[in-house]
Amino acid sequence: ETCNHVPLALVSPSERRDYGEDRVINLDVGDPIMYETFWKKMGKKATVVIPGWRSMSYYSKGQSLCWFLEPDLCEQILRLHRVVGNAITEGRYIVVGTGSSQLILASLYALSSPDSPEPTNVVSAAPYYSSYPSMCDYLKTSLFKWGGNASKYESDGAYIEIVTSPCNPDGFLREPVVNRSGGKVLHDLAYYWPHYTPITAPADNDISLFTASKCTGHAGSRIGWALVKDAEVAMKMVKFIELNTIGVSKDSQLRTAMMLNVVSDTCEQIGSSLVIRSESFYGFGHRLMTERWCRLRQAVKNAGMFTLPDFPSAYCTFLNQRTQTRPAFAWLKCENKDEDCAALLRRHKIIGRSGVSFGCSAQFARVSMMDRDDNFELFIQRISKIASEI
Ligand code: PMP
View 1 (tube, rainbow, N blue to C red):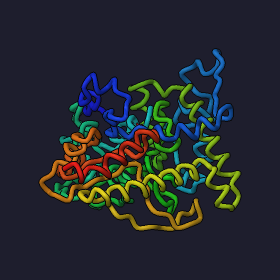
View 2 (view 1 turned 60 degrees about the vertical axis):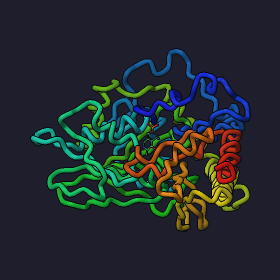
View 3 (view 1 turned 90 degrees about the vertical axis):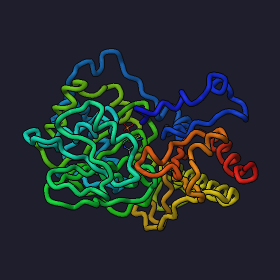
View 4 (view 1 turned 135 degrees about the horizontal axis):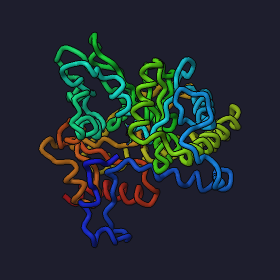
């Protein structure tokens, strides 16, 4: 998720070697390491062995329009959406990608108009995911270009709106904001899972993107998938991936299929008891995120110089209870509008990402909530102390 952000460069070599209590904590990237604890407990149940002869071909054996999609992964994606109830899969084509990052580009390629004299504008409402602008513009393609904040978009003609729901960075559920003819909408649903947000209805979009990175925490496997309504659009996406990487690692697909299988198993074994439910993957994630958000809100209150977004609660159809949103990121705002929030955090050895990267002011900064327990502990201690040290 970094691209043009090189957070390690912000850390001096001596700081990088420092593992002590005084070390710099890097919460710039949304690296979902906190799920390690769950997967360690799963032990052999979540261990994949792939014999040397398996999956040597470029091709997969399934009948899918996406010729490189492993049938095991396809089956487990369908099963997980059925178990969680967060997306309609009937009448959809599944396209697998090397992370949802590759699928964002594949979707833009498929949704833009190759015959148009002008590149199609790609917009997203601020605060938007900080990688969208550079993803759109780094190849300087004539197919599409970054068109900025969707809330301020006024041009006529074709456009693509990316709707990130829940939103990275601020955590709110989102709807399209432009709603003009000639527009196409791409839904980036990386965080539409029950540990982050109440599941209120199954997603029913033209294109919805999901990723194992945020769903199971296996960002390193680099597997994402798209649910696509239109066959022609799905075929163009497949073509993009064929030209780009001739498919997607089979080893990664098989491992991800296994992880999704374990997640669905743990969810299906829970019956209706909430106590047992907390042992499911999403029960674990929900409990951990709830604890972390509670501690962060307390620390922010103690510090007295930041605010956090307030989220409405909603009935989660998966957890069968009213739940609060507990985003993967904290979107901190400094009370003082002249304060540079990321610079303030940096002085306290916390690396966050400035609001400027998300199309907002430097008064905001985004901080990952998904790091290991020890780093999260240090983060809380430092945030609590900030006011007294100023
Ligand atoms: N979309 C959003 C909103 C994200 O936050 C991220 C990762 N931070 C991605 C897409 C890309 O994730 P990946 O390529 O790991 O699937």
